[in-house]
Image 1 (cartoon, one colour):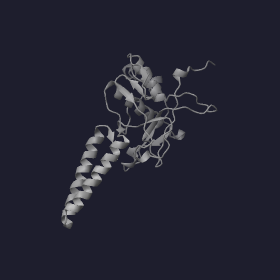
Image 2 (cartoon, one colour):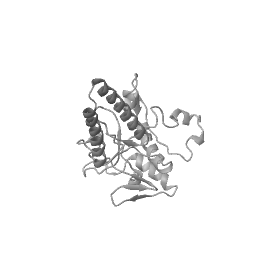
Image 3 (tube, rainbow, N blue to C red):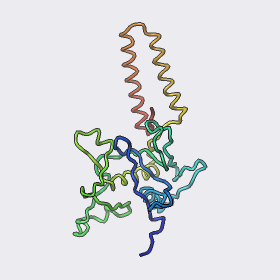
Image 4 (tube, rainbow, N blue to C red):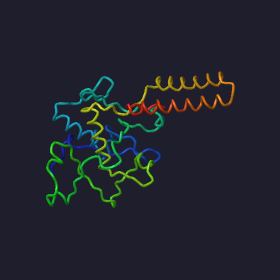
Length: 237
């Protein structure tokens, strides 16, 4: 049996946070020599690169060891990133920006293919992932949507990888800003600024109801600013 060329291989490892949710994805890594998996790129990255290569977009490595695709740069999640400070950030990881809690793409079953019950346009000129969804295989993962739902919503592994492919392609083709974080100096100035503002109001406000009013106003403003910044693709402390 002929070996599969390295450029057609990709690992499917999934990074799971301490609370059991998938918020990050590993897109580049080096494994030990004795590991059965010797490919350095994830399946999602390989698929995205093959798709973009057909459009004349090839990856370039910057001086900072980051991957540039067209006008988009894929950056690795730094070790100081928010709640991930001090945790394992092995390899190159990114925050996973989920598109939808449901099926991210057209689903075609094996039965539909065998019985000719699908349209060729569903797969023509598109990235196609072949996977399994049988519950017996236990290829289910908990996502942030699981926590925000009264029902147990888990996502099949093949759809996790589809989310990853979609994020890369959306960033390169549509200019959609990937989720990213500030530098350490930016985080320091942000925390120092709000802390100083709170201390200033404590000194100025002499009455209890003034403290309460200012505290509520600060909380509302801070929440609003964080929300606006987050939907622009930035994660701040």
